[in-house]
Length: 67
Picture 1 (cartoon, rainbow, N blue to C red):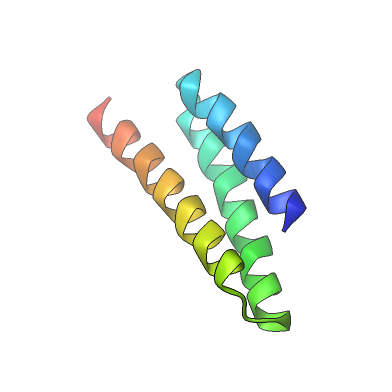
Picture 2: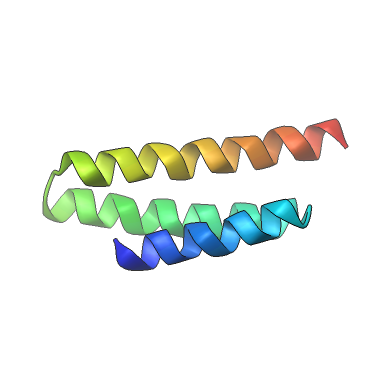
């Protein structure tokens, strides 16, 4: 899940720079990685990180609608 966390961090930088579509792509990639981790082993940490990835992506969608 380290890669997912790195993608989230990059998405956060893009979010701060108002590059919402690009941030959505990175958060979506992090979500995909998170689900693959959950398929291999069900951990609460993976679930917690996934919820953050989804929340961040949702925030981007909201910002894009508000523009």
